[in-house]
Image (cartoon, rainbow, N blue to C red; front, top):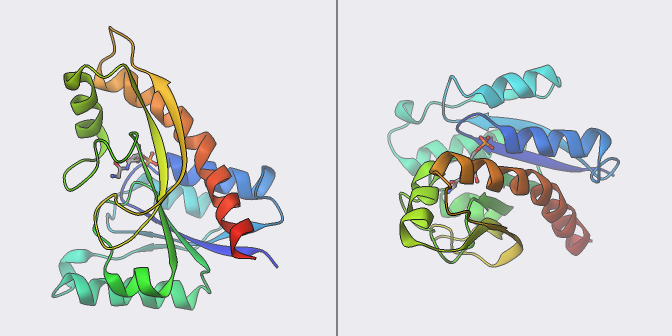
Length: 196
Ligand code: GAR
């Protein structure tokens, strides 16, 4: 039986795409499928990517919920409806409520070598700016378990990249993103193999 992945996004969804591709033709083929994609942004391109692959694409507006708890009740309802086994955060920028973390195996990808450059406000270009400003000679990507603190759970997989002297946040982001696309499907496979 294929494991059913629920992927939560807020933006472009290039990591979502790498997961879909791995499920269709790569290392997750026959082992996993994306059961639903949920976005908190109506214009997230990842929703279009899901639709192109005939995957249910759900936009849930955070503003319509009174608080984070009730928002994530709705998210949980969608995960249940679609029979999700594992939740993958892929550029999802809201903090997931404990109710979801307790009910599901939740994993995340982060564009740095955690525990460095994690925590609230550390996402996207902010991370790469901080790495360059610090003068670090390496960065990378981390897939980790999600617990109730930002970017804190145990590390599942990490891969390093060099920071070049002339890197800008954009060039570094591009190099890290290539690594992300490679390791996220691998890390998901690792999680699925551990779960049997
Ligand atoms: C990725 O670089 C991901 O690691 C990062 O957002 C980007 C989403 O890109 N996530 C975080 O910074 C979480 N703290 P994508 O929408 O193209 O997958």
